[in-house]
Length: 387
Image (cartoon, rainbow, N blue to C red; front, side):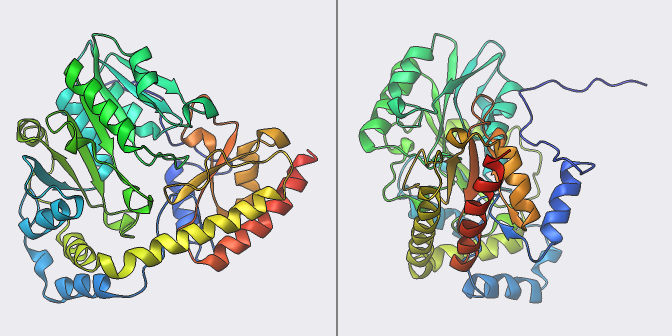
């Protein structure tokens, strides 16, 4: 019996040289305790604290013997809405296994054949992959330039949309560049969505790292679909927990297409509840550390002729380092740094057009690890430049 592989937008995961599969690569890197982890935008800055203790208590009580509520614990849902200032808005929240799952469900819920979707390039390519499963066209808009501020703008959307446009994707702050939106820009996106009866899929995974942030749902409550994640600022990436927030008429459709109707990891939910309750105690430390870590990277980049940061300071916990002026292939750079036990990402992971220009690094890790990266990066530029 024969089956045909599905053909969607380019897969975001590329098998590195020397590895049998992507999974083989990640497992080997993950198990290496000496590896400095700067390739997945994760956050290592939480020590053993109330979040860990809450999960430990959940396990000790053996609560994992039972299924959790299928749409998430009400306490967690309420805390998320309070965190976003949406508690008394006409929205509904569904807890799931991370913002990635939310993005898939959103695209599934609102897209059909004949629709097109506007996304940024660079961006999070797995979203393009999801959208291509349900829509007829993905309009990936080049945003890697100073003219548009390295982000998808209302002007670019107006220039590239038509009567079949169904979704505008806003990754805010943007993975991989760290650019973000002003309130005026978000209001204009909302106007476009309302005027044209289309959806704003608003991925706010990196919201907590930004100096300021504006929610699309506050300006277009019936058109915005918000993706919420516990992977980044909360440091819970391995627990796979997030949420989708939208007007009830949208979430009612989402409920009809979910696969996991027996709930999301309840140990993760216990940790998330405590993380939200204690957020005022740890958020400033996380933000301040990531900002000072950026300064370390900036100082290293400034030593290297032909290398620059397209966006600085990044409003997220990652940034792109442009290597094109030094004639260095980002894949060569990531391979070189991996040999020094520093895991980073070449630009092709987040861009089909501009992947040869930049390396992406995340920096929500201990400052001494960032110092190590900075030292090795400067050496790497000189070694690879000669090639």
